[in-house]
Each structure stands twice: as C-alpha cells, then as structure tokens.
Image (cartoon, rainbow, N blue to C red):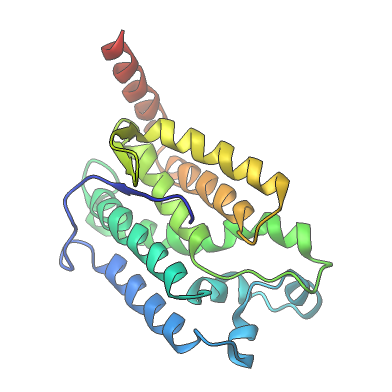
Length: 228
C-alpha cells in the first residue's frame, strides 16, 4: 500500500494477536530471503501469463511473501501490524465471531485477500508475459477495509496531515484514488490489487455476518447526526 496511514489505537501484543505476528514473521523471513533478484524470486512473482499457460496457481499466494525492497516490506508490515492486530482481536470477541471462528476467519480473510485482490489483474494481464507483481498489499488492503467496516467512525491519521479522518471517509477516498490511478497506469504500483483487496476486505465479514453492514450504516448515521 502506498498511502501513509495508521489506526489510532492500542498496540496489539503477541498474546492478543498471534496470527498477525505469525504472518509478519513469515513475510519478513521470506522477503529477506528473496530480496535480491533470483530465479527463485521470479518463480514466486505474480505473473498472470505463467498462471494461465502453465497452471502455476500457487503464484496467487507466493507473490505476497516477497517484496521489492525494504521500504516496500516495511510499509506493508507496519500497516498490517497496526490494523491486523486490532482486527484479529475484534474477530475473536464474542460480539463478532468468537474465539473459535474468529481466528479462522481472520486467517482466511488474509489468504483470500491475496487471491481476490489479484483476480482482476489475472484476467487483465493473462496474455502479457512481461507483467509481474509482488507484495502483500492486496491482503493488507483487505485487513484495513475489514477494520473500516467494523469501525467506520474511528479516526485514521495520515502522515503530514495533523487531523484524523473518519475511516469511512478515508476508505471512500482511497477507493477513488486507487480506481483513478489504475486507469492512468502511469506508475509501477499495483492499484488494481489495492482496490479489489479493499473491496474484498469490506465484503468478506458481511458474508458471514450480514448484520455488520447494517451496523456500519447505523454508525455512519449516528456520526452524521452528531455533526448536524
């Protein structure tokens, strides 16, 4: 992800959010191991043509385990740490999915976010062997937007802007920005993955608990009524 933001909340501990720490550990290890360009790294990239022609479906997952450079890795890990831990804790609460289903759904959200964020790019680039993508941004976007669904009126702080932005407003702006940059296609950033990963992260919890969408709307109504 390339916008700079963080959720203003208490930092999660290893005890509270073990899956988040596990994902972080695996991602840091594999990214470090394959940071330099190599044949092994190229085999892990999201290359739609290779998937289409050679049925290398594992690339839908493996590309999330590697990163371009330390800045790319560091930013994704930072955002996952700030949002993922809080979301994992929320999912485990009895108010949402409970201590048994919560961790399963959290892990499923992350893994499915890797896939769903790349489906559009797969069909868009499946005949372009030169197209490659890497990084966990799609899955991280899913985590961020699942958090926005649960806490739409929570503040998100953007670096260099001194005030917090309600998360539902940030989410709308982020989707609009990602869609705009995707159409421009004038940089080397996976805006399609950011967009569709975000959409998936919002939809995924609703699939298992549809009332979350009504609660999302109610929280926004309460927030707007408080202003006016």
